[in-house]
Image (cartoon, rainbow, N blue to C red; front, side, top):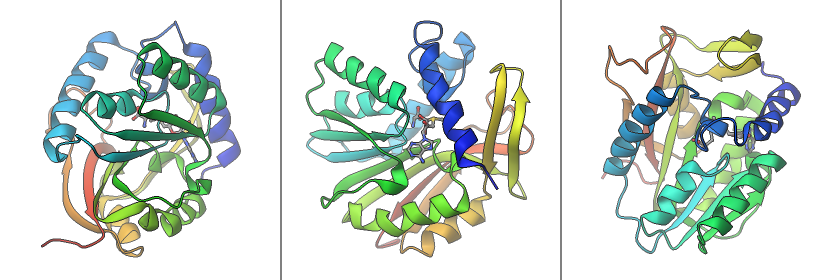
Amino acid sequence: MLDPVKVRHFWEGRAATLGQVAFESIANLEQDPDNLRLKIDEESRKVFAWLPALEGLRVLDLGAGVGQWTFRFAQRGAREVVAVEYAHGLVEIGRAEARRRAAGGVRFVESAAEAYQTDRAFDLIFISGLFVYLNDDQARALLQRLPAWLRSDGMLLVRDGTGLGERYEINDRHSEHLGQNYSATYRTREQYIDMMAAHGLHCVRDENMFAEGHPLNKYPQTRLRLYAFSRRGQG
Ligand SMILES: C[S@@+](CC[C@H](N)C(=O)[O-])C[C@H]1O[C@@H](n2cnc3c(N)ncnc32)[C@H](O)[C@@H]1O
């Protein structure tokens, strides 16, 4: 099981990469410039093709990092985007970026996603690259609260690493790409869908982010996958 202390230590350390890697790489960890461009372009095309028009909507971005997606939602007209992130240094970078862009509708909240509290409901909840860093206790704690934050006609969009065939876990293993130890857990597609269904969130659509053979499918054990959930289910 993932050790939350080690995972958090890793993420607290990423703020130190500010100025050394591209803004998006601070949290998305793709440090090769060509791959980063490809990743941003192709992922944005797919994510925004799945989303409704964002004008006037309220968006909650959980595990937002420095807000690379947060700012995209704001640029596309979201009325308000709340970015929840637990690493203090990443929140500071995100807040400075919001000031630099004069992004008035963007608000960063420093909190663990599973401890976030609000009595408001959002049109869109976006979770990108967060579940792979939550152990089962944390994921359960988050999912016990999350449905109350989603409007009954809202969408939960999850973009996260997915184990192929079986759950795949990396525990405190040295990464050459990052030059430090790394931990993550890749639940299977069925595990994501069942875990959400147990909390009243029904999968209405899911697909791998990249087609087979794509250069950004880097590891044979996992795929980045996009899932749309709703409180109502299909129809
Ligand atoms: C892979 S990054 C993804 C960042 C952003 N969502 C994106 O797609 O670019 C994962 C982020 O989740 C944050 N994170 C991990 N566990 C968290 C938790 N329990 N609560 C809040 N944030 C968390 C990390 O600090 C990191 O910024």
